[in-house]
Image (cartoon, rainbow, N blue to C red):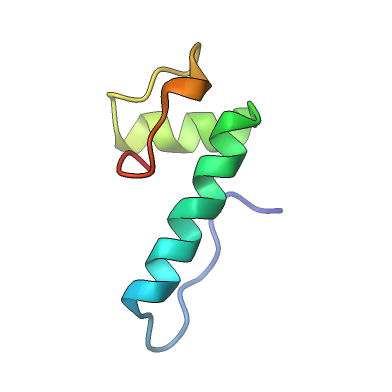
Length: 58
C-alpha cells in the first residue's frame, strides 16, 4: 500500500479520520515508510518507538 494516496475530489472529515487511523495502524506495525512519512511531517513521532504514536499524531 502506498504511503501517500491522492485525495478524492471532495475529501471529508470522515475521509481524513479513516486515513489517520490507517496511518496509525501502519505506524504501530513498524512500517518504515509510514514512520518516515509521519516523522518528516511531525517531529514528535519517534521512529524508534512506534507504539507511542497516537491518533492525534497521525
